[in-house]
Image 1 (cartoon, one colour):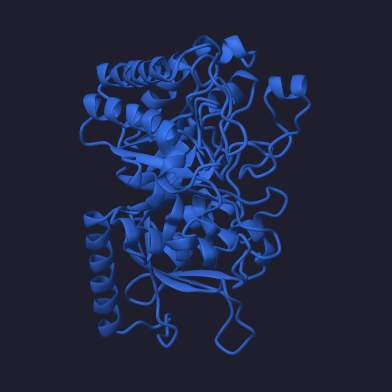
Image 2: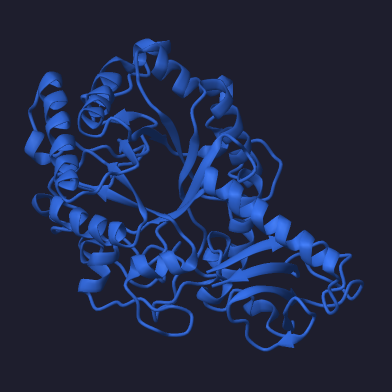
Length: 430
């Protein structure tokens, strides 16, 4: 494991003084203590992994060593996974992926690696999002009350199966990107009405899920999740305000944030920028006094270096916010060419916001999620000419650190066109 503490540029790392060594140790201890008390979630939705493996895909670390995916994510430095649940995907035509049995397999793998688990109930047989919240085929023709019962039964069935295996999800989403409600048309928000009256049916269904979660796992955080983080706090968080006024219950706010290709670093108010997403996280956390998590984010797999820059900027903007619980990447495993068989049937293209290479290695897009740069495939590929040097605490240069406290120096000397990613750091290796 490598734990990095940003180093102050004024220090001469080739000949560290005892004062500098003591300062580095104090910084390292402080960093470790803070994170032990309040762990920032760094994770990924890996719901496709078993389907990819069944099609022949494997995963490797940066050195080309084949690894089980959850073990690889742990090596990178991630501490959580998110798993979606569909009601009956096989009946829909997709296959058995993301059904109960498949979710249990993936949850067991994550649990064995010590990763926290988030369960994401779509309450559908296929993807649910703001425009598509299809009623599960098995629930077709149900009344509102029958749908409520079906939600509760489905939720408890999945969670009790996890409980039987000794797996306790830390977070549970009741619905996915529910900007317009869930399970159309029964739980669709009625925009012809005003205020909280719009939410009556949606809240009834969402609360059925909330209560079911609490019955099985009272300590789990129940998340209500919407898309478009950049504008989620508009009009004093009107969505969550009206949802709550209608009696809706939640312990955490979940947001999707997919930064715009051009305007990801913009300060304009109407674009999907990291600044706007961070402002939403802070404002919503303050307004509703609950933690906020970016449960989905990602960037184009076509430019891993730019993705690394964008993701690093996002982390820098939200990690210091007390309101932010963490960030999860959706979904890193694809390389931009792999796609589910069902996508061919319905004419969909491959997902192009993954963060792995075709041979299964994590790219620089995940460098912001990592506390171990050696686990990422070419994290500084655009600047491979930049030297990296390691020093022990006596100032002696070494080619490869082993165990103990070392100092790493990357980049050019001050004044020689240093770039934003050039840095120096203190590292504890074990």
